[in-house]
Length: 221
Image (cartoon, rainbow, N blue to C red; front, side):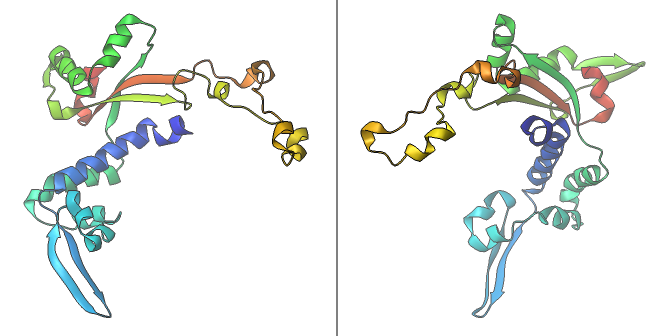
């Protein structure tokens, strides 16, 4: 579920787009900090999105509808944010251009995994920054790329988490109220009993590169 839904490439692309919308709007868009109630109206100057948590009223007004509020603006400064919103609504999402599975047992892969995402991005720009495709010169810019180091495990990194767990058979449940010296003992489950359900690996790591510019994605492939 985590791999197929929460960190799926489409889900992650939409997440990156929403992040870009909020980051682009942050210097210019203000969250209202006023509320009306039985004691009248309390108001202070609006706060940027990134600082809305500093004021309780502003924080409570920071909802999903902030995207719609940004879209309804007309100021030129928010035009880049509105452009990304239109792409999001039209399902013109950022594209996954490259995915590299990392095997930590491999020395080359292990060295790549130790690098920061920004360092990997700069290397990609050096290698693929200038390219000719269908007779056209294409130049990759830093803002075209999003490099993500992606890791999923079952809770114990590369190890089987069940090795650290002990289970009590149902037949022993009635003995849980026994004196301390006669309490039943939980035991580790024999792996042979569920070997058909054991995954081949307990941790996966990969490097994913998303491209913000659809016309440049082929340069990375």
